[in-house]
Amino acid sequence: MRAAGTRTTADGPTPGRAPSPAPATRSGSGRGVGLHDGGALLELQRQAGNRAVTHAVTVQRDPPDAGTGDLDTRRPVGGTVPADVRAQVFDPLAGAPRAQQILSAIRALRGDLAFPVRWSSRGTYHQAGEIWLDRTWTTAQLIVAVEHELTHLHTFLAGNAANITTMTREAFVAAKMDDEIAAHAAGYVAHMQLGTAGAEPQGYTAFQQHLRATDAEALRARDWARIEALARTWVRAQYRTGAPGWRTSNTDENYYDYWGAAWDRAHPGTTTRP
Ligand SMILES: [Zn+2]
Image 1 (spheres, helix red, strand yellow):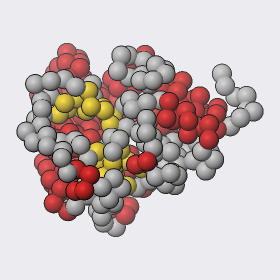
Image 2 (cartoon, protein in one colour; image 1 turned 120 degrees about the horizontal axis):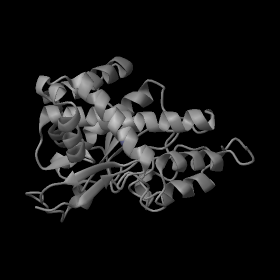
Image 3 (cartoon, protein in one colour; image 1 turned 180 degrees about the vertical axis):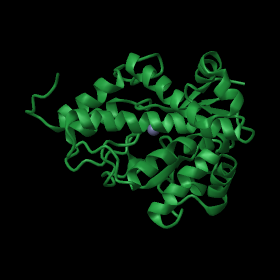
């Protein structure tokens, strides 16, 4: 057993375009930044580090098969995840009604569930309608991450993704955080429904304690909507207070400040900062 914090990475603030260079070639942050002008903001994204907008997965035990000798050839970065591996990650979600609900909404928007799934070398994340799976992660870790990323994919497809270019500072920060918080909360519920062993979402254990302490009745009744609402409130509080593990790893910033600063960088000369 170990408690290594393998962390997934963040979605870009404007996931409407694929970044350049391709995400697989960038190091540091896991941001899928879809900016038109790159430059300073892209650098800020990199500096935020892998914990940026934490989609963390806590590894609970060593993977049974950690052999990675030929990952490079079997899992080329940017390459399409083979159907059998994709099925190993996505099929178990059939056991999570919350994940199925989001997948149904994705299907309604796309017309199918054939969204691209590619191999990543820097975490598992959503970007511009694609889900990238870290090629070194175990199936259990990937399932946990996908429970979270489905929300980001849906937000993107619904046209509700935060847009750093077109939104006001306040709206951008709110949209960015709302989506992140929603993804955490939906992921918690999906994970509770699945009960997958081997990995768990970031903050999951602490939230379970909070749930038992504050609304044991919702837990007993499996009132998922109530549990998810409680999760959103709890996760928001972690972000708002900048609790340990809920701040940027490199700059040690509160995420509300972090995204506000990102907007400022993207809008030089604008003096709307409070
Ligand atoms: Zn996220």
